[in-house]
Image: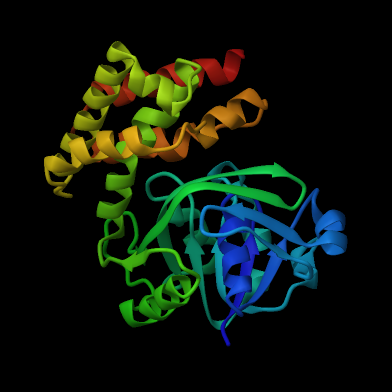
Length: 310
């Protein structure tokens, strides 16, 4: 049996970790404010895949009480990555790997700096999920993971092998969700940014859920223009994405249940939002290729202003 550690038991970590535990894997959950509640009451997941309640889980208030695990899933927001040097090393044995399930581009770099080369993979999660109470996750839609080895900012470093990732992929598939692997994580990250960059930012700037953005002609046209610019930036950076993926992203969002992005929920709750991971890192990658995506820059500057002046 493979042992998993979930670092960040929120909307994402609680959902995927709960599914892995339900499927029979040994999963250890790192919790903060929910620790006492989950220790006493377990973890509840309401899901379109089927509701379930884990009455007993391996709940931990800190990494000191957790065992070393085979796969450490990093599900914290990237704004908390400054904590990784103290959180990750105690959870690793000689063969452990870290799977970074965070939004943004090159977000794996912080984990790599904390644990060293060759151990870090990343995953793009296409997931609509919210934490709605202590130890209570509501999964609204989707859930697919596309993961690959992190190979450094210049794609020159060796991450975990594809064989190793395929084993983890099959464990996720056994839970009932879609999971695929790719040898080009940066390409996968840019594809995910084609949704994150327009809809996370616009949801904050326009103070709207995805359905309201898509139903308004002006907001919809703006979202599509941003998607097109993200695609072009990816292509000009050496990561080709087919033109039809623009319309796919629009159709995908049309079909989505009405959804408040995680960035909008964080903004409304007064929490730090992931401006640098999603926008700043994309702009810095573009600058390394002597590109200047104007719409991405505009959203970045607006979000920086709103973050400082809310």
